[in-house]
Image 1 (cartoon, rainbow, N blue to C red):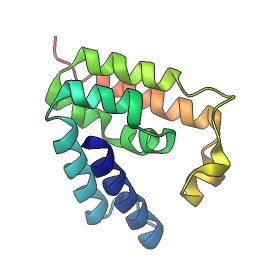
Image 2: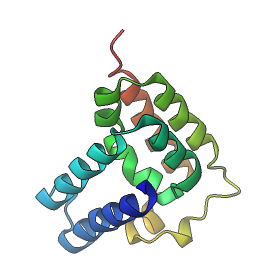
Image 3: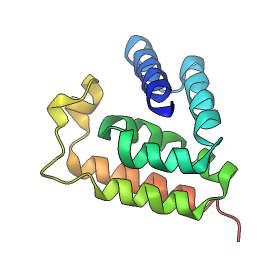
Image 4: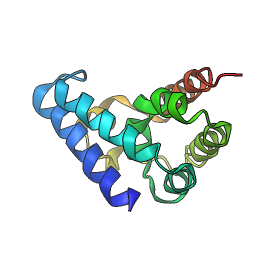
Length: 130
């Protein structure tokens, strides 16, 4: 199941960042590669994961690889799914203090979250070839 495996990968990605204080470490790259592989295998399952099983924090961290996922899948439906998922995050439901990582608790308020994820989706959409 995508949900359990993605939670493990994201937890490892966060652990690498927290322990090493470096967002571009080899371990983080390995987490990205593994997540890309899983999320590009079955687009329907991936869309269901993003819409139903992916937490707000996981969605934020996965936005780092939206470009690569879209480049591999060339899926406009997945872009729309990502936009729909972002719309689910509202000011009322955004709970910054409940995030696992200190980085998110301190630095990623609602406005920053939306701005960052939206820009990653927009950038990923540019990877779709006409």
